[in-house]
Image (tube, rainbow, N blue to C red):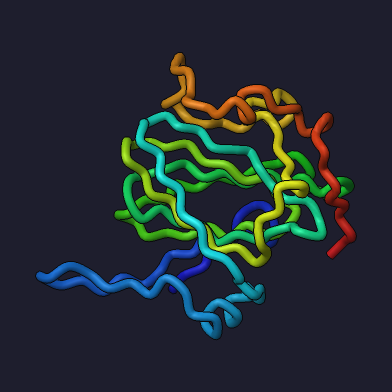
Length: 190
């Protein structure tokens, strides 16, 4: 297993070991001791999966505020996505900055997103299955979100959106900017 550090400390790309032969492959998607050795010391309590039928589906950018904040370990088990994490911790030296990674069924990469980050993804293929491990349960009252196209953040969703309208939920289509959002995260230094 290989860990790739990103420009934002704590946001990690994980390349899992894949063992293949003429029958297919085997890949260990999570082992608590191995991930703790990598510095990912969270207690995952819930697994989620989403399915997006259409290419160009954009889900995000979302988070849950404390006390239901969530760290996420995400992967794509079918299809391909661009996955994005945005630092929303007020006073953080990387506040408003973002990191992206391509996740696919072929590359078996995972993306670790700590608490205090907005998360979203754009499907690059039809019929995408996306998986999340989270360290806190879902709580509707703690939901937070921001516009995927917030001009102050300027996430580059790639050439797929060049002239194409993304497939969005009403909530994502009409979301606030980061500055307008109900964001309760404050960076406490590291």
